[in-house]
Amino acid sequence: MPRGEETILIVEDEAAILKLAFKVLKDLGYTVLSAVSGEEAKLKLQQDHGRIDLVLTDVVLPGRSGPEVSEKLKKEYPELKVLFMSGYADDRITHKEILQKGAHFLPKPFTPSMMAGKVREVLDGSQ
Image (cartoon, rainbow, N blue to C red; front, top):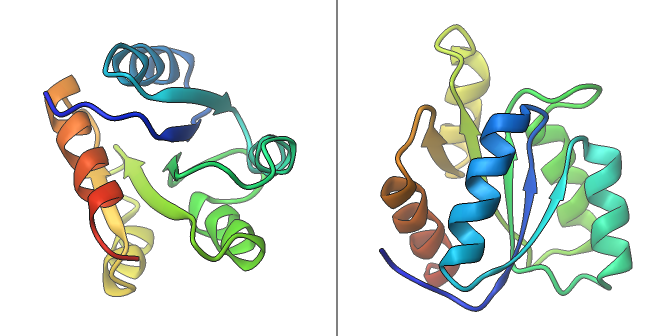
């Protein structure tokens, strides 16, 4: 699996997925932070002074959606890269909207190697 040294913030409210993603990315050499909501994600970015390279966020979050969260974060940190993930098949409007904007998307369920490959692709690619 592709490895890295960048800093990744995972925004996920489902504990099992958060735990798996955290462990896989940490084992691959990344510095990993986590948040369960958009508000917590914003605090983590502020605490880290914007030195986070990628936000891996669920599309459906408590409070604000992943796209809303990423839009707010990118206003303050325009260089921030974002990778959306979701397992909701009935959330087609949000998925369509995300994909139409050219955003990166990882469907759930995913394997560790799928996640690692997509994370590396987003980090190595352009905005």
